[in-house]
Amino acid sequence: IAATHSPIPSPDKVARWQHFQSILDRILPVDERRPIGMLIGRNCTSLVKPLECIPGQGNQPYAVRTELGWGVVGQLDPVAPDPLSQ
Picture 1 (cartoon, rainbow, N blue to C red):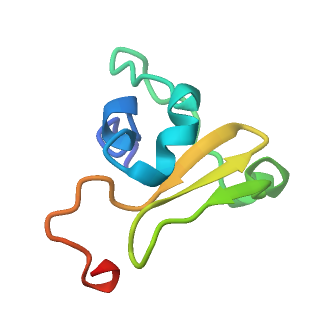
Picture 2 (cartoon, rainbow, N blue to C red; picture 1 turned 90 degrees about the vertical axis):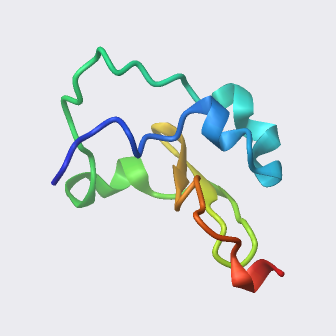
């Protein structure tokens, strides 16, 4: 599994999406000087269980609140408009 900083949702990337405005203050800045030390996934389902969701339209990204806080799922920098949202 590649563990790089580039796919981590930063506040400026999240701010581009209108449906995420209510959680902007919950998205932490990305500090690329800090190494990625742990990936949490299927081995710890209780921590990543969705508690709340902010859906997008069509193929837009969506946000999920878990015990670990808010996370964003999906492509934040679309290369082309989503045909399903038009």
